Structure formats: structure tokens, C-alpha cells
Length: 324
Image (cartoon, rainbow, N blue to C red; front, side):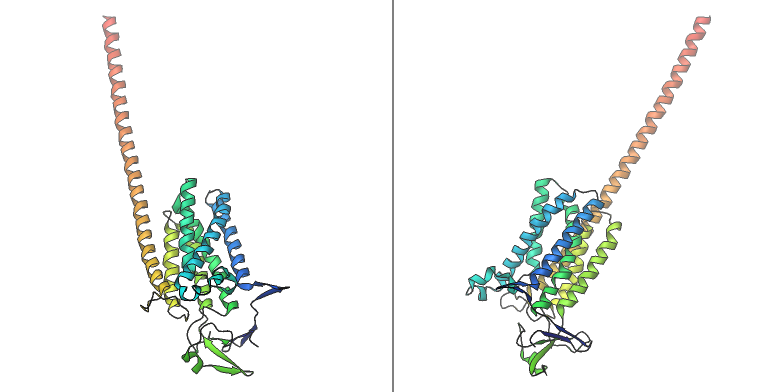
């Protein structure tokens, strides 16, 4: 019964395990969906590279680099803010099958790795970031379903249409409010919560579609990057406020991910405006250069006409002089 997950107002019930067991080894669904998301994102990045005239091989290399440093960053970030637990369970730091990846840590270290790669390979960093961040939402859309299988990253109590019920025995965070609204099904207590993993998965789908629609209207490299930061940051700011398991900044009561989300939105706005200004400046300089070239050409042409006229007059004078 502890494998049951219910959406009571929709009439949906799912019996969901946490992984596939092969002998004494279990492959967690959490890891499977993340791997599938990464592979799909890699494939999409290569397609986008071909479309924009880039070398797809760069994105094969970048995918493995970004995946490695993304997972490393996500884990380090999570461990840092849960150090009270991990300081007493050091071996659990490398055990990813239980979850414990914070997306912002992955984005931060992943982006740093990408920027270092572009510098080594002498690539346009804004174009590469645009290509990478265009497909990152694909991994996030699928990756959030790992939280579904792990019964984690859910929100506070709700009785809305999308309310989700999970067994108390499987829940990672249980509060007195949740227990007050718990229900008993077949003799087992269930809590009812916001399925925030679902909210974020759907939100990221919207961000991905927005970026895909906008990419053909991009006026400067870096705009896709900016829109991703704004779009994801806005959604995460809202969704993080619903979650029960937020990482906190010490004892301040400030949710780390909300603070970072707001910072991402502001950074995205600044980047978008800066890249638009850069594009406008370049276009102005090109127009000025074209205008100056045309003016110079006209002056040269005028001088050539004057020179030709002077030559004709000189020849006529010379001819008349010979005739006399």
C-alpha cells in the first residue's frame, strides 16, 4: 500500500515503486528519468547547433562536461545547505540514489564549465549559452518526475484540484498541519499536498516552448540565455514558496532558492537589455559606416568626373593648338 499515490479530485491512483531491482541492486527511477532528460537535451543541442551553423561535435563534448559538473554542483550545493545531516553521515554524500540534487548548484557549476570550454575553444560564449540553456528545460521537465517517484519536493497542504496524497510512511517531510488534514485509506494514513514537482515540470515546459518560439526572432546572442533566467526564475520563485523541504539560509527564514530565483530574474533582465543595447550599437555603427562609405564613394566619383572633364578640355585645347 505504501506504493500508492493518489490525486483524489481527479480520480487518479498510481502504484509507483522507487526503482527497478536486479538481484541485490536497485536502479532508481530518479536516476533513470534524469539520464533520459540529459540524453534528450544533448540530442536537441546538437540539432540546434546544426541549425545555427555551429559544430555539433562541440555539444557532444559540452554535454558530458556539463552533465558531470552539473551533477557535481547540484550535489555540493545540496550537501552544503544540509551539512547538519551530512556531517554525521559522510558516506551518504556520494549516495545519489536517495536524491538530494539542488538544481541551482548544477546550473551554477555547469555554466562555469561551459564558459571555460568556450574560452579554451575560442567560441562565442553567448551563442553557446543560448544553445545550452535552450535545451536545459528538457532535462528539468523530465527530471522533476524523479521527485514524484521519490515522494519528495512536494508542497504544503492543499485541497485544490491537483492535490496529491502520499502515505505518511513514505513522506520525507510531515508537519502537524499535514497530519491535521491527513486521511486514512485502507488503514494507512495519507497526507495531502501540492504536487510542486508537477507545477515545475509544467512551468518548464512553458519556458521551453517560449524559448523555441522566440529563437527565430532573436536579435542578439544572449537573449535566449536572458529569457531562460527570467522565465525559470519567476516560476521557481512562486513554486519554492509552496515547498516543504526548502533549503534555508541559516536561521534567517529566507529560502535560498527563492533568493537565487529573484537574483536570476534581475540578472536576466539586465542581460537582455545589455545585449539589445549592444545589438543596436553595432547596427548604428554599421549604418554609419555604410553611409560614410557611400559618401566617400560619391566624392571619389565626383572627383573622377571632374578629372575626366579636365582631361577632355585639355585634349581639345591641345588639338586646336596643333591645328593652328
